[in-house]
Length: 411
Image (cartoon, rainbow, N blue to C red; front, side, top):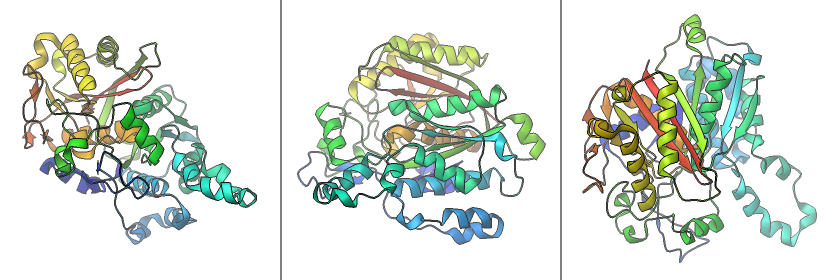
């Protein structure tokens, strides 16, 4: 696993922030939109890349990663750094795999809108000077190409879009490729969402973007399942996972942190941004069924929990529909109260959060939950709970009726 987020660069720092309930939200400065109504975001600030720390055992990777690094977008840079951490954590620099037996799946679509947006004025004034490299840079598959070049990967590779469920959808596709024997391992990457001013205004005008009331207290803006929730807070993070069959990991002699016991995805059959209680409930039921688990074995749900009033109410109704009388026994939290909504990479960020909580025996707090909108549920409070989870669900839902759920068990 590897991550660069607003609450920590690297797995260790990220996990400590989860334990402490540290928020990445801060005052949002948009030079292009000085009068934008929302001035809150959980964005990535400046970060230093310590390539030297990789040199002793990853010399080839470092030399490949440095090629053109300074000219890359922040999203590409942070994705590379997260991938290098995941690669090292999986000990692939020491215990290499057959290049054709490892794949890459990148989560998200329209990942490069900022590249085009930043070149619009230049094109208007001097179209004849448009860089040929722009064609490669504006394709989502550029992430696949760059990562495959750095890590020498020769197996299957593609991008997967599912709006805010893209991260989960990428994990699900990787798990299927491995389970059916097409590859032995897969690098799953979730690049940072780099929204343009136009996209931010679009989210605001559709009523999805919150934070307008929290300019003076940004940390309080992302408040899933609280009556004062008013929309999601834009977050940025690049996260990566290295998925591998248990048999292959054991053959390589590396640690297994958690296991994907079940996955499910399904559509609501519409193009709406509105969520569906039935769709969310059914995808959780299918995930649990595929994992051959019972309802009573699920101890924790890392909710989609965006802090939008409709989204929060719908997810709780879906959980209630699935778990019924067991609802009060299952712990709930939302990582988005700390990281904001990381959009395409959210499912990967929250998968990392779920696994780290299972590994270290705690549940991170819901730092802004003053009074739950439904008292029948078991939410974590404002400080972390010491609790050993053996089986957990991680939900991600996206515009266009995309529903997904993944069931993790402790490694």
